[in-house]
Image (tube, rainbow, N blue to C red):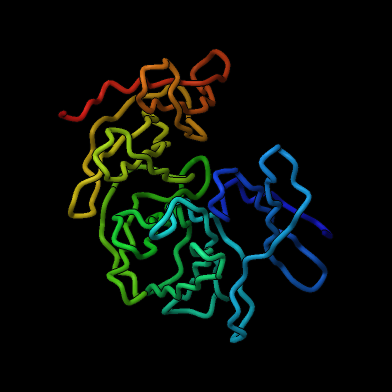
Length: 260
């Protein structure tokens, strides 16, 4: 590889082991390389997962963490910025190891794709996009979030979701209350009161706000895991302090239970 930049980790082949995803930049092209986990933490074998369409050059954008119909990880590709509509491509492996290509189209290219995956569990790849950019003392930031819902034909429909707030990083989805619906979590970096925003999944596809948890800093990466050993998914967010004190980790303990 000439010059590789990490894309993230995720299970591409469905064997239960996390694989390493890289963007490889050569002098003439950009492509994605996956280092396969052999189950013992060794990453000797490589594979590629790329669109086969030759209309124009696609470039890797971000991982797809909820591949339609499975728990594997896929990859979202962007087409050239040639105006409206704008084209994307989702690629992932099926149960037989064959590459699936899902062609996606939106009215215009988004300034920031915050998530790609089957967020409403209907078998198609959806996206979450940052809203319009505005100028602030910290530079241009995106305000609001839109859901880009795939009705099944690959033409994504924009649904307004989070109209206010500054979102500069990923929106992450977990099933926090084990009801089968994906719940959305993100950091609102509004300088006046940064917060971790938790939204519970709903059957109509638009997550509803559960809580707005203030942070002492601007916040950063959000991850999930059972911190206290009670069997529920808790949340942790990296703190970037701006009000004195040092940076650290902010933990939210999950108190939500579903009915038996």
